[in-house]
Image 1: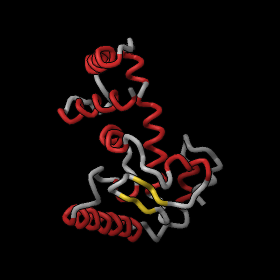
Image 2 (image 1 turned 180 degrees about the vertical axis):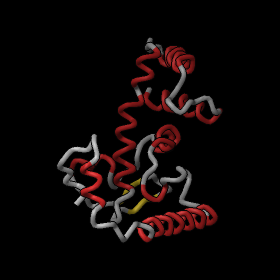
Image 3 (image 1 turned 180 degrees about the horizontal axis):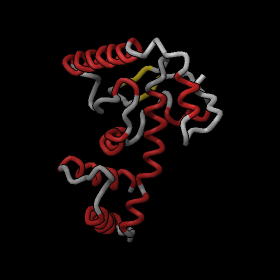
Length: 175
């Protein structure tokens, strides 16, 4: 049943019907009806909407484990090879069930580490050059602001301003 629901949601994504906030009500209802026809299980669109929560939590754990520097990834068997904590043992050194479906459904919203620009891969060369140039431009701009701060202040300026009406007598941040 889980695989059936995930496959239906993947089918919707591949046709481009998912919004940035998830699936529309009409698509959730379609999955609920298809599940009833396939398995005879009567579920509501709300239950279909809540179904991916468990799978999303699994996906978050899987992506965290994959991004560990000591982890190795076997793309053929969809398996994380790692000696790690016992709480993550269900995802380690065994093929991950429904990995492709979880990747299709959840990967768009989990931009992490080297995939922060696009979920399909790392920065392209031209994007990397543009990003690097932007970093240098911002650093140069910040340095120009630091270089142009006033270095001279008339010795009587503070007392003159403090004697004006409307200013408090004691301003600690000025001196």
